[in-house]
Image 1 (tube, one colour):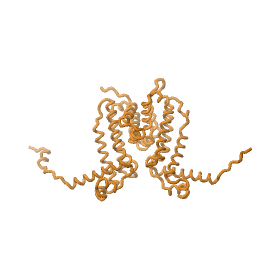
Image 2 (image 1 turned 45 degrees about the vertical axis):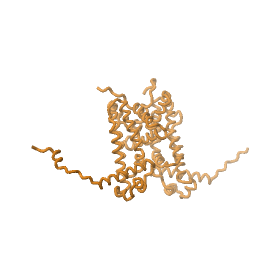
Image 3 (image 1 turned 90 degrees about the vertical axis):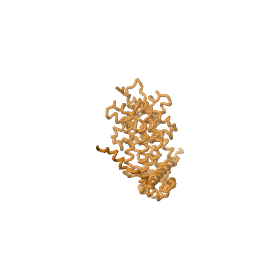
Image 4 (image 1 turned 30 degrees about the vertical axis):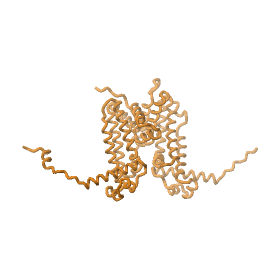
Length: 207
Length: 213
């Protein structure tokens, strides 16, 4: 047999682990300092490495930010239930499932999202990720509300999707919770009611 | 015979002397605020004192003679903009058919967002711990809520309190500054098309208009 035991490159593994810990340190600091971007010294101290270690793995803070956003997006994608996770139920079930998942995502990533928005500057990488994130939200709604959206003409469908995206924006959730003082359940109800009214009703389905 | 107060006031009034120095100072102040706002519209970064002075055509010293620091200038610029935006809003009355009110509301809100988005972004990004700026953000949000409660009073009056609040908050989310920015930016909609998105969405969110007796 030609199979040989796979050699594990311990140095490479350690380097990947260090990279991961730096990303996690950045994320933890972003939660505390948002919208301010943490400094290299703060990240190094939190991760337990030297500043040099950071710049050995990331050419600059912008590259680290991009890596952090990619890592976060992967986690957000994992949070959303796969196809079938609520997407095949009746209208009420689908709206409630979507609102619950979207609300959890917003609560979890609000501070990183704010930091990303405020500090995107002229970075094409960060702007592309913001666009991608919004596209994913829209794609998710197209999946969840496919039966209702199929009832509309293309232009009307586009308008409704834009309105749904605005309604369920990260900052919309934050305002309801922080500014208007709504509980998690009340904030979910605002979205549930809003989505229900924005989507056309199928005469055969209960409201 | 008793003299009427306004007549007394008229009798005692002396020709008003225009304090030219004071007028010039007020004008300089306005030009500094205008320069600050113009720079914000060009670049979201907070303008420096030197760039504001250069744009306004004054010295940096002139800026700091009228504003103790840049924070005070930010507050003054916010108040100035708030006043102008309020005048834009109240110019459109809250009467007419449902479609008339929807049109008036979204067009006015769209214009306000179009004009004041850069200042709004700067305000949110840089309010830090400033109680002054935070109070103004709160005031602006409350004004938006009051305005839509006023515009759709008829429809909202048909709802019980909780549902009414949910409806108002859903519309508030929809017509946020950043929602407008996305309509005009990433979605590349014209002013009219962006208004059409808001109008249709609010129309769907609102309950039917009750018959007016």
